[in-house]
Length: 212
Ligand SMILES: Nc1nc2c(c(=O)[nH]1)N(C=O)[C@@H](CNc1ccc(C(=O)N[C@@H](CCC(=O)O)C(=O)O)cc1)CN2
Ligand SMILES: Nc1ncnc2c1ncn2[C@@H]1O[C@H](COP(=O)(O)OP(=O)(O)OP(=O)(O)O)[C@@H](O)[C@H]1O
Image (cartoon, rainbow, N blue to C red; front, side, top):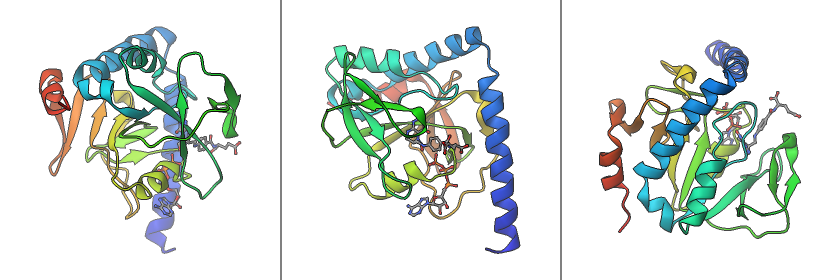
């Protein structure tokens, strides 16, 4: 690794620590308010989700809590899945979830559904520890989502979710980093375009993502 990369890796480590602390420090009231805005944007901006198989996640360390959105989409007919960590350098597997599913403790203490089957997914909701103006993601640094997306053909529609406080000018993307198609924050839905993240009114997003 050359000096530039060493510096970038150190910077990423520092940012991960800073953003993790920052996110855990958000008050419960603030988090609930922001989370509600994200849930509404996901449900209203992506009507297609009601007819899809969607990979979500089980919230961890102050991430946006997607369970209300998952429960609602389930009642509307969507098929939902959660990621299961198989091993360090292995893509995540998506395991079918529904509101009463029995859960097991996975790696890192993140729950996943017990005794249910792996399914293919059409869309993926991705938790962002940080994100940048071009739609790139900073995660915990294990490369699970990048490795998972790289192995999926065709790739799913990717919707990153985060709070605005986690935005950075650039995460200094590397060749393996895959940008999100959309990012949803408490402020807006953003579409990734060649000139960067572009705010998209919910109704415009919905007409692009009707899926019928
Ligand atoms: N909610 C949620 N689920 C997810 C992810 C995520 O980002 N959020 N993942 C997205 O990739 C995968 C899990 N990836 C993770 C990678 C590293 C750590 C982590 O906290 N590592 C600690 C060391 C923990 C240990 O070894 O016990 C650390 O870096 O300090 C957690 C999850 C799959 N499930
Ligand atoms: N498609 C891939 N194939 C092989 N290795 C990969 C791939 N994607 C990422 N990696 C490796 O994974 C490691 C972590 O990547 P990166 O720093 O982008 O993590 P991250 O996206 O922040 O974390 P995570 O996805 O776990 O939340 C890097 O060493 C990278 O080389």
